[in-house]
Amino acid sequence: MGSYKFILSGGGTGGHIYPAIAIANELKRRYPDAEFLFVGAKDRMEMEKVPQAGYKIEGLWITGIQRKLTLKNLLFPIKLISSLMKANSIVSKFKPHAVIGTGGFASGPLLKMATVKGVPCLLQEQNSFAGITNKLLKDKVEKICVAYEGMEKFFPKDKIVLTGNPVRSDLVELKATKSEALAYFDLDANKKTLLVLGGSLGARRINQLVADHLAYFEEQGLQVIWQCGKGYYETYKSHESATIKVHAFLNTMDKAYVAADFIISRAGAGAVSELCLVGKPTFFIPSPVVAEDHQTMNALSLVGHDAAIMIREKELDEQFKTVFESVVKSPEKQIALSKNIKALALPNATADICDEIEKILK
Image 1 (tube, rainbow, N blue to C red):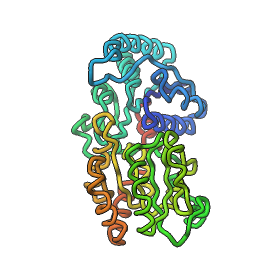
Image 2: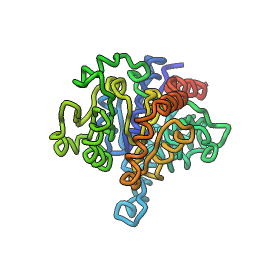
Image 3: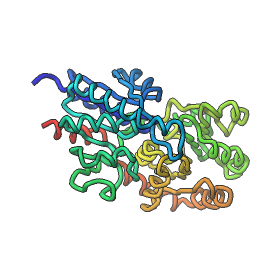
Image 4: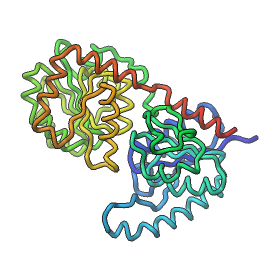
């Protein structure tokens, strides 16, 4: 038999693209002469990120369906038909041995056509609340790799494999020492450090919270690494001081994680999976504007294991200080949160997903 061919499809957000690239890299390590093709949504970030990772990508003319009547929605049936036709021709030409879908609307048409043609397909669902695309495809695929327990409420039980989400390899073994990490950020080794993560684009409400509480954090004896996002750096860079370090983007996440004693973060699937490996006391402030409110669901599944703290955006004003101090002032609580979040980590996710792909190839 010649070399294997794989199509990977997912996108719309970094949360769907990153796992697809991680899976492709691991398959390439196992099958060095395999051929790969990615399929994404035209004009979304995958069209740039996937070629940067060294893979070919084709774009479909598709968007998610909005919940209200807009021009985009009126075009949706036309885009869907066009995408199904293009997906059909991609699958016919490339002749993949297996197709991997990581969620996001671009993967719908592609996996639909692949299953019609009898190509074995595997889905990867990153969130604790399944996305609409994956729910539509669940009966036609061979296997569904999930990151949370209890997913049989969305998918057929016999197809589910609990693998976890692929995370960046440099996070699986955090190599820097605490003193190196603090020195890198020019911070004081005698103070506790709060790391604030708003995602690569930043999170408006988290940034407002931090800006309003800078004096409070200092009173608590904390220093802050504040990743405010590209769109907010100009607004907040003037707050930079000996104890407050403001960054548009953190290229050395591993060092930031090592330096941190406490973390405030959004609750996207990738962030949650990374933070389980990092194992520090974490406050999740889920984004309320994402599809199906899945960030809140992701955070709640950790809160249920006493593995993290969650504060909803609308409750920040009245609850933040009380909740924050209940952790910062209690070493017992910090130890419990660290131990419990670490227990949920699934560090071998990428390899485990690729093992499932190997099974469906046979």
